[in-house]
Image 1 (cartoon, rainbow, N blue to C red):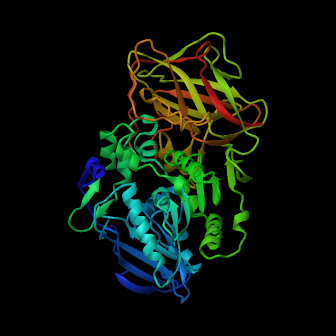
Image 2 (cartoon, rainbow, N blue to C red; image 1 turned 60 degrees about the vertical axis):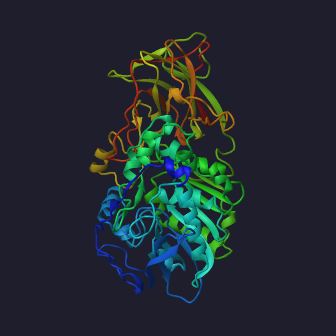
Image 3 (cartoon, one colour; image 1 turned 180 degrees about the vertical axis):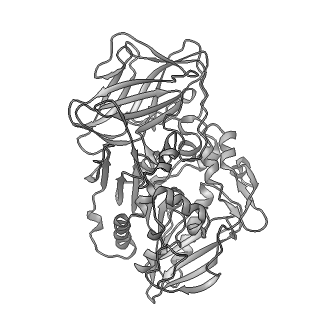
Length: 580
């Protein structure tokens, strides 16, 4: 056992219990045009060859079980891989059908053959592509230990890509595509540089398991990590299963070897990358933008949409856009893809007037200037100049009102595009630490808070589910968080715009000690109209709530009063990327 595996926490895997019968038998068969998994789903637009439960041997002798869907043709075709541990038969699982209905994606948009969050074989086979849905190591019929995120999966992904590339039906070109887990696995696999990996298309995926999943801002929060593992199960006798949530509780610092293995290395990616992001995904936004920045300049594109990843991934306009990218790099079709703007970004206005597909050469775009708005403790406003004297603002972290607000009002139409941050001078009264949460709301001319559903379904149930959480489904504004004892900055990786915390030490506060902290906030694209305002909220609790409905909210480690020092030698400020 390696040193890394000695650090991992293993438990017996869950027993795989399919929620619906397996409609396609093991082996090779043909699904005819018009075939449906069940009534209401998209009928197949063409005949599809299915090779089900194919065994693929990894470099250490362990075999994975994969399904391959391909068009009925004698031509060699490229293949798209959907890499995740969710199970290759899960496209039609009742739990996922219900989830997509809550989001507002009708069954009729998909065939049900797609892996959850992956490419739909019905569309791609009709376009002359194969689709490979693997069960990753240890999942259902695949052999071995179930690992979650990191070098083990990266090696297996490399081996599968190279196996697919030499099959007699393949043209030697393989790509990775998908959202969420199917996106962040791409950073890891592509960084190993498989020779036959021709392109990647990650849409919304974290890139650092510590910073993006189990300890954002240095505050341990394993609720969602536990949730994404619920479907990781093995058929037959239990196998070893890595418990990421338990690891998050046991290892609170990021310099642990286990967490270092779960940081992607996108700077090593050499194949073309079409990356898709949003400002509003409280799980994936930070990791997607971080990975995008790290991929070497060259053949990389970024599209920033204004919704949630699943509707965007399955919207025909963007499927066709993805096809243009793949056609160019996997089929060699000269369709002008490389003339696509390097950046296409969105601007939210929260009033039905979002702008999308705005072309640019960089992000933030040219013309953006970072400006500091200083916290005025007396007037509770955000001003261009800091006050001469400190006027502290305090709130009771255990009281009824556990936050403090500061407001800026625009005098003319203003765009804010890029990476906000705050620098605060903080003091704890009655405790030796502080968990601080930041949220930047937009207010209309009457002072009402504005927000936006990121999914098509705006019905009553979604209102209920997102009233105090479900932040991935309802966007309230740019957020940030930090445990103040974890405030140490990595000076080499930090920039004036984006602080990067080392999370490798704990520095508790002493009584009366006032410390400076910088808090990274989510990138944003926002329009303010004349008379509209920004409300900066500094809070002892997460005002945006949990990421997804049903996930337990985080429990802050707060006691006593939080004091924000404003003015004099303590110049607390919000830094914003303005394009005026």
